[in-house]
Amino acid sequence: MKRISIKEQKIFGQTEFPLVLGPSSDAFTIEETLDYTSKNLDSILNDLKQHGAILFRGFPIKDAKDFNDFCLSFGWQDLPYIGGAAVRRNVYGVVFTANEAPPDQPIPFHHEMAQVPKFPSHLFFYCDVKPSEGGETPLCLSNAVYERVNAERPNFIEKLRSLGVRYTRVLPDQDDPSSPIGRSWRSTFSTDVKEEAEKKCVEHGGSFEWLENDCLKTVSQVFDPIRLDERTGKLTWFNSIVAVYYGWRDSRNTPETAITFGDGTPLDPEDVNLAKQVLDELCVSIEWNKNDVILVDNRQVLHARKSFVPPRRILAALFQ
Image 1 (cartoon, rainbow, N blue to C red):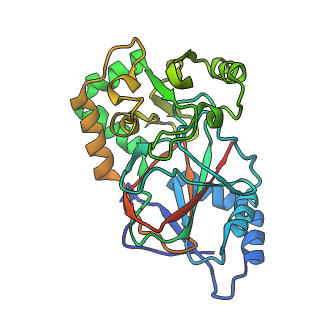
Image 2 (tube, rainbow, N blue to C red):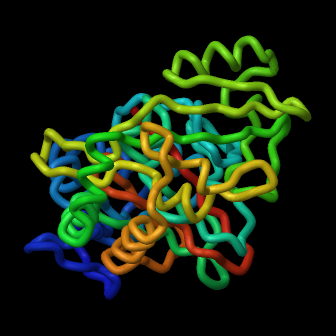
């Protein structure tokens, strides 16, 4: 593999974001790709730790099976999607569709599954069908976001660190594809039995309440939205505050009540808007090419999705 440059990359300090790798020759086969990955894993992971995300471009990863095999070549254990809000469908092996929210609705920045105790350490995204227009998956370095928000709103950061945040969501009885957070309690907790859903909710440290139409209201435990990445020694903006405030709206949920401080008091909309502006300013938004793969260190990097004109098919895999 060799390093390549693309116009969308940004430099933070002296580090490119994201790192972009391409095949060393046009004759690279999928078997050679998998073999190279497994034999050079330490080097690739060192690069990932330094850069936060890696775009693999130009490799012969031609379908969901190739993508599945590429992901598994890293040797990680996949993470079941329990507690996540997005509607997804299994495609092949550990591969699922990415968030299937309506194409006209952008998905704001978030760390994957920051609203549950067990979140993935690594994410893979794969471009199976290139969007005809829009549909980028913007990336943003979490420590850079924290530093900027702390510099401009130190009182907001202090309050977040002292009180934490709590997430509240009303889950429908059946998947609702019209909503960006339309995943049903049946899909969220992988069960059709209410008592089992209740058990899993409590195991995640949250509470629950059954509402009309068999909807399930879940209230999370209090989470620290500013976290230290002990590998890098950097504080990160590890939360889904902006995603909730600008994305968790449907017939069952309102953003103002979906995210609060840990004591139940509301967030200041001006503070949240400042965080959104910082994310939009610092992010890197890369136009997808067919067969692109992006590997994201979920503890260092937030991601989002821009609205798009279909068709578009991005696949994903989550790992512990």
